[in-house]
Structure formats: structure tokens, C-alpha cells
Length: 281
Ligand code: PAF
Image 1 (tube, rainbow, N blue to C red):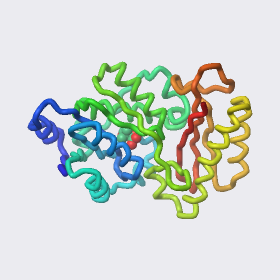
Image 2: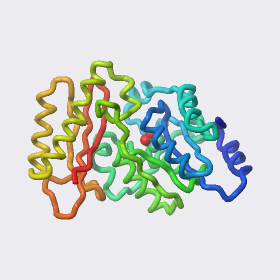
Image 3: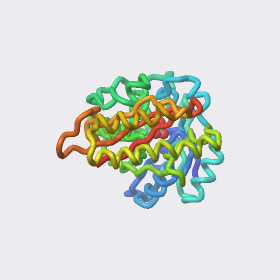
Image 4: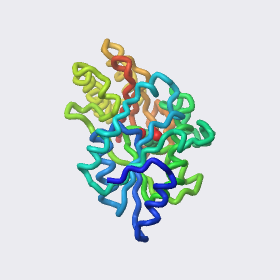
């Protein structure tokens, strides 16, 4: 396994490889879990060379406490990646390598995709994500880049970004990986007590029942029912529960024929913010 910290070393390593090769990138912030591993396995299977970037990007955190508490587990991450393939290249730069002139975020026009849900509750978050993803794509120039569908809004925003900036990369969305009880895999799950980690299966169970109800109930009624479940459950504090069009992310209260809808949720459990989503049709 190659562990590379500088842009110059990464470029020189990649240019020493015999062309042509297919290059896959899995951008991560570390604290790797099975969700990341499914992205990495896909990348390894579909490419000749896979780069996994591990970089906790300060510009996408709107809450400094969240940034400070974000788990940094480089050694454990490398051990996990080694189990998939010893040929993976880990790119783990310092913030000064990525932002040599100081931290900044570009201001993107994501056609409104960033104005709802995560974007509405986390000021500046997607400008920070867009900035780091654009920087990484420009440094690494992969053929394919892999993102999880747990942050489906992020995935759509990155598709929008690469189309608008004409970045020649194929964006691959990967299905959500869940714990045995249904809780979506997330680095934040490590911060839940074991009791709460079990109880948090309630989130996905509620999404699944909502999906069933959506077959013959209006969007509004499904949302009303879902919100009530969380109001009645003392362990959770709901931030949002929204039904949005899968392509535009426009939040809806009424179904239109032929549109694809996704139910999105952000909820606090023990002060830890968890997100999840489910395709409704
Ligand atoms: O999804 C993440 O882990 C991050 O937002 C990403 C895409 C690695 C950018 O920092």
C-alpha cells in the first residue's frame, strides 16, 4: 500500500505508472466503515488503480465542535483498506497541502440543489464539499469517482458540479450500506452508545413503513405520520423529514405522475446528527 501525503508525490507516482490505465477515486474523510469499503471494492473492481483520499475537510463543517470531534483513525483505516487490496494508494494530505494559501470555499450555483435539507440546515456545507471535491478531481484526474447514496443530496450536487465545470469524470453512486438492524453505516455511529445504536434502528424502520404508506397515501399524510412517530419517541429529535423529487431535489407535498421520490431524514440521537433516505417509488 502506498501512503502519499503530498500532491507532487502523488502526481509523480501516477505518472510513473504505465499508461493507459483506468483510475478510480474514492474521496473520504476517513473513519472508514463498511459503507466506504463497498465504494472502495467497487472502485478496485472497475479500475486498474484506485486512490482513496483521506482528508477531513475543514471547509465543509459549519460547526467547529463537529470538526473537532470528527474521528481521525488513519492507522485503522489503512489496515481496513489493506484487507481489500494492497495496491490501493492512500492520499492523506494535510490541510496546508490542500489549502496552501489558507482555507476557502468557492461559491457555486448548484441550481437550487443545495437550498434544501442538508444545505438549508448546514450553511456553506455544500460549497465546502464542492470545493474539496473539485480540488481532488483536478489533482488526481480519475476516470471514475465514487460517492455513497446515504448523502444523496451530495451525490446530485457533485454530478451538477462536474457537468458545469466540464470535469471529465464519471460519478458513480453506490447504495447505502446498513448495520444488521438497518441503521445506515456512518462514521458518526461510533459516537452513539451501544444502547442508542440499537434503538436507532427506529429511523430506518420508520422510513420503510413510510414507503409502504406512500403507495396509497398522499405525500403530506405520509410526512405527517412520520413526523408524529418522532414526536412520540423521546430518544430522537427530528431536524427534517422531507419528500423530494429525486432529480431536482425539489421538496414536495403532492405527488406528480411519473416523478421519482425520495424520503430524506436528519435526526439527532444523543446529540449526534444522523441522516438517511429511502426511495419511495
Ligand atoms: O462524503 C464525504 O465523506 C465528504 O463529504 C467528501 C465527499 C469526502 C468530501 O470531503
